[in-house]
Length: 368
Image 1 (cartoon, helix red, strand yellow):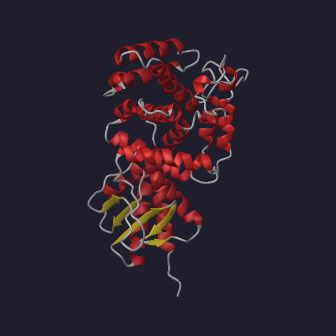
Image 2: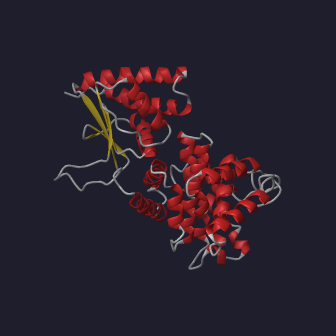
Image 3: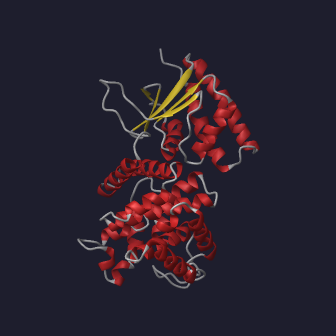
């Protein structure tokens, strides 16, 4: 007899949709309220269908398992939840029948904002662990920040070796790093430590990714938009990989350096599942904000918001790196002055102002 899974299928869809809705609308918005009510009803039906007092979702190599069993139903039913769990760095989610609306609402706000939720009495968030005899334990939410950074570097390497795979792994690793720095208030401590890394391109990519997401969150950008910004910022200079053969990017002639936006956009466009925003960021991040300069040459073209916010952090990082021999506080003042000078021409003046305000108030920012 075939197991009835209609209610569980509906729950998987409703959980993903409710998280997305809560990422777009305030908690007291009618749409958020309706999404929560629908999810509550779906949970009750799924518990009855499965005759259990809790239900556990596991993310295993980009596939979904429900109560330890691979979910082999239609991809339509699982894709949304897999993406939501990936963005939030969740590997294991258990919800008990006794869960309250307040607990569900907090869960949805966190997932909708691409953050790792906190466990509550009836909602458990954790890392995926396979019992002895079922395989190796998969490290996840318990990893140190440094370990997560190593995972991110490895996943980027996987993506570069074979563009047809590895993007989901890259997304998950990126968001585990970004969420860890936010939760542990270590964004600028990590930036400081990364300045000693030998691979300048890798160091620069991660630093810009951290700065852009920190800046975007200060502007109340969350959810899918924040997720795509983070990916775009991390990969903004990926075109250099097609130009550098035993050379650093600073050693390349100017005419070659100016090709990296187009090469990067083409490289990313060939990656299945790559978000469109990341491709645009790669192409536009050196265009002038006022449409009167930069590269690639495009008469009057102005960069979109994602490229503009990336350009501010990109410029800041290049300025600090170029003044590495200068004491930290003086380096900060020099970079801030140059950013202000470029505001209104190469850079968006509003984003420069909000970025510098953030640098004034964030712990450790002026010595990173």
